[in-house]
Length: 466
Image: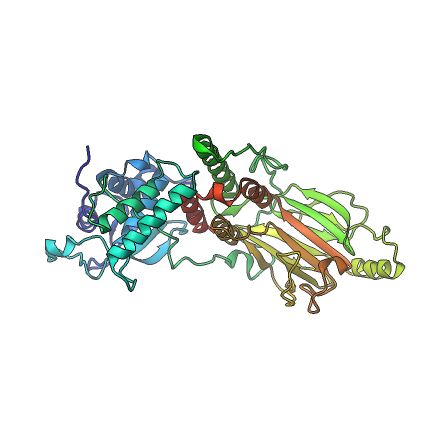
């Protein structure tokens, strides 16, 4: 039986006033700003007390979809705040001692005791008020889009909660009684999220860099790609298989980004004048350093840095003696080489030797704008957040994001004269194997099989960790 869902604003005011939730309190005398504990579930000091306010809202709002999952409670609570006009004042969720967020009360709904009940009992915000045509027309259009989506995308589950919410909003706008009691509004990442690149800026040893090799213990199903099931796309079987695909993808994604640490191995492919001369796997999450030490036939741990040393081979297979001599000159001046490592959610690079190094995320980069790897300090090259954002774009029909970095030693890249990478003397592809697995799953299953609102919400939440 359905029950009456309380209005968030008066309910939340009473909860903050009550003081029954540890950490939930007003932060100014005017009672216009309040803080909420925002502790990540993976922290060692995480406890049930941290999510009491989120659980309380899930219970009183009748959101049975939470099913005891604190992450869902938190997401729905945050979404409800955004829908009612609460603004994020400060985001301190990464504070070591007191992780929390501070929100400001909506201006049109004062939190003081003198506020009348009428000021709180407002209708849900008009989601079409920014459009130039009537709301009734907009809701009709949205309903048609929704129905068309349900017809064309058979992989959507009939129990998809966000689909029900969209339909309810459409019906409400058309003055038709919705079949269930409430609407849950899911959010995109907060506008005030900042890129946390400080871990790779301003010094050789990075605060979050692992200093010792870590075995990649089944983080993404081993080195090889996980076995991929077939995904028929007809009827109930197609729905079940696509849901299985989504769950498998989410599980792999969660093991790739643990807390705020990106976990991967590296596959290093070396090319001389477009011909592959070496391929090695680096089973170390901290990273690697490209050097020229022909005596090293396989990656070797450098105990001082915690990175693996990967040696480029001698150019003995090159038939053109001039090219071979030029290649050897570059190798001889490689010195301490090129470092490629992971710090938190960032893949970084730094040149340590004499020979300049250039990089790109695309093998066919036609920008003609060379990108030199910095020698002064570690330089962010690829953020895990960018991969997640690219995966969201892929779900909507765009290209799948890259999973490799391409380096060119001794020559500019991308080439100002648009010469292809195969024409360069020494190029190195560094494959981030965990991203390669995710990309293989996405491409193999197709963008449509990942077109799940649940997955998109999960990816958006993961972006907040990066």
